[in-house]
Length: 190
Image (tube, rainbow, N blue to C red; front, side, top):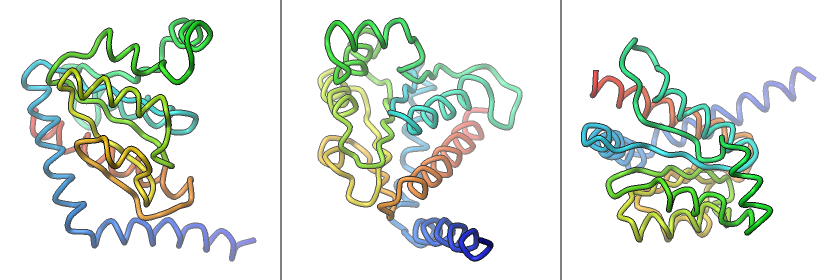
């Protein structure tokens, strides 16, 4: 059993080591930190979306902005788009689950906002449709995916495709990347 545990930890470290050595990814992180900082400075919001574990991660990262990360400071306008269960279940029932994020984004998203979609496959239809709405409204799109980027790689402004095909390793890295962004945006603003 302990060998299996060590193997899992080593696998997680290996993925993060690849990210650490990817200069393009590190540069893109700096760029996105500045993009999000500017969005907040301009009075815009950062919205998150995902499904399953990625929905939990989306909610977690939104709370880092709207609550706090390290500093006691004013709340930043950030939310995960799935948190209104009455909306989510009504739209999924009356229309389709595929439009739960695009419809919400169409209602509350404005030019200059940022939407971050988390999808380990990069192929979540509801996030792809949200990114279509975002493009039409001049909302900045950031995709957190697995290694291939899936369909999201072709429709986002910034892609963080974690070098793994294993869902838990991808999600662990999504949280790490998200925490880096939250920490540095908070430092920039406060």
